[in-house]
Image 1 (cartoon, rainbow, N blue to C red):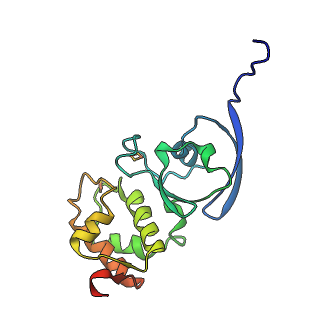
Image 2: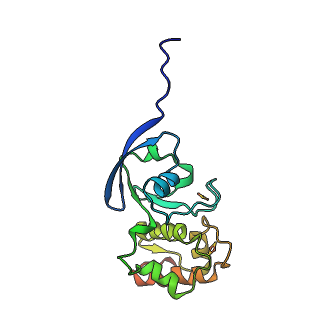
Image 3: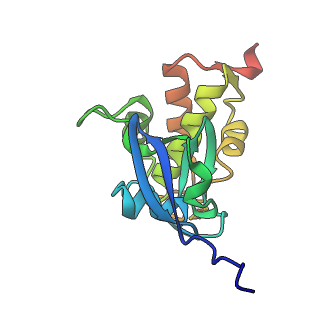
Length: 172
Ligand code: FES
Ligand code: FES
């Protein structure tokens, strides 16, 4: 019994977050969402259900859209993470944030950062997408919004897709 060592409670991790290298000791059970919000003070990543359902906590980890509430921070050791704070240039919104603004695609805004990171990842990884109402609703089906009814979100996604030259799969 004397040979059994207690499990380490903390582990040092290194991540690149929004282009900045960070090294920190974290509790091995700390969630990625808590690491981002409380250790890195990036409060744009929201936490809703904490069960991987609502999508509010979505960030991009190594090029993949990921729910930070169901990942441990230590799982991202060595990774590149992008949060919603990576998008704007100072006070200037990026094209997708601007499209949400132009189309009144948010009310309380709680779901918005997660939605925007999910869409950003889909735009970054596809040259063409189904930009019909149904296709866009499918794209955003992993993000729950309690306020808007999604109509203006669909319009914003379509405007942004056209702006950056994403082709409509139905027209190819
Ligand atoms: S808070 Fe992570 S999916 Fe809801
Ligand atoms: S704008 Fe309120 S939850 Fe989506």
